[in-house]
Structure formats: structure tokens, C-alpha cells
Image 1 (tube, rainbow, N blue to C red):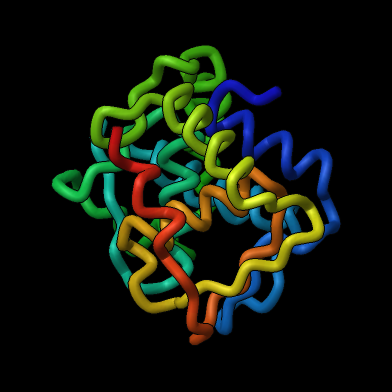
Image 2 (image 1 turned 135 degrees about the vertical axis):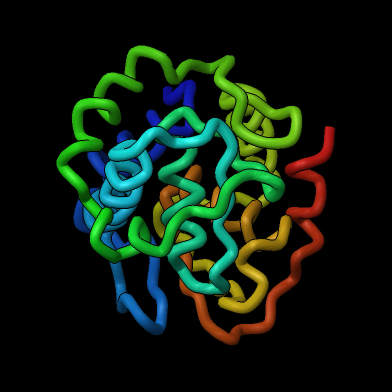
Length: 189
């Protein structure tokens, strides 16, 4: 069982390699292995330079989700008051930068259950909340979740994306109507 958000991403990619993880209008459908590659490309870009401890991304695109996953996998803190992820990291010249490979793999030794992630939540705390929420939702590897592309940076869509990753579900970003109510409490104690 994964104890960190980094482990969650790695385990889902290993176990569900070819299964659909994320569909977006710009990217098409990414498998879990492809999602991990996209996320690690962002992480390498973040760690290629001296990254700040608190990072945020609000482009209004699927890059926001890739950046949030990369921040978690890198052991950084996701904070709206943090430094914005540079556009060069989001598919630009720093995306998948080799200079970040060593630091990214070194983080494996430091990212633990007690690593802070966001607003008073560490990796273990969010994993516990995701487990509880997934029991309520009943999502699994066969679940397809339609979510709005607009508002990706808001709490409920972020919580739904984390829940989909936890369950190994297929998240489809588009214009679908959805009910955000089950996800409101993930970020609050």
C-alpha cells in the first residue's frame, strides 16, 4: 500500500500501465504510464533549478494537474501563495530537463508519509482522507469520472482528480456537469 503521494503515482503507473488515466481536449487520452511520464517531466523541470519549497500552478489547463502531481512527487509543498511553476517547465524548454533527474531520484529518500503537502496536510494525512473518500465513492479501476476542465485549481475538482488517481479511475476533463459536493471536505480537517 502506498504511504506517500509519490508512491501512489508510481504504483498506479506500474499496475495500470496501459489503462486510461486522464483524457483532456489538448492531450487526448493518457495511460497511467504516460501520465507518470508527463508528471515526471514537470518534476525534472522543477528540480533542474533550485526550486522554492512552496509551488503553485494556475494556468487553467491540464498542466495544473500535472504540476500538482509533480510537486507532490518532488516533496515540495503545493501552496497558492507559493511561486508559480514557470511556463518553461510545463512542456517548454525545462520540461524533462536532465539536470533534474538526479535531484528527482534523490527525493525518493526524503519524501515520506510526514512530508508536508498542502494546507496542514502531509502525504499520510491526504492518503488517509483519500482512502475514506474512496470508500464513500466506491470508485475503482473501471470508474470513468467526468470533470469540468474549467476550475481545475479549485478544491473540489482537485479532490476529485486525487480521488480518481487513488482509485485508479479514468478522469475525463471537459464540459460535463458534475456534483462537487462529495469532495468539499477533503482539504479540511
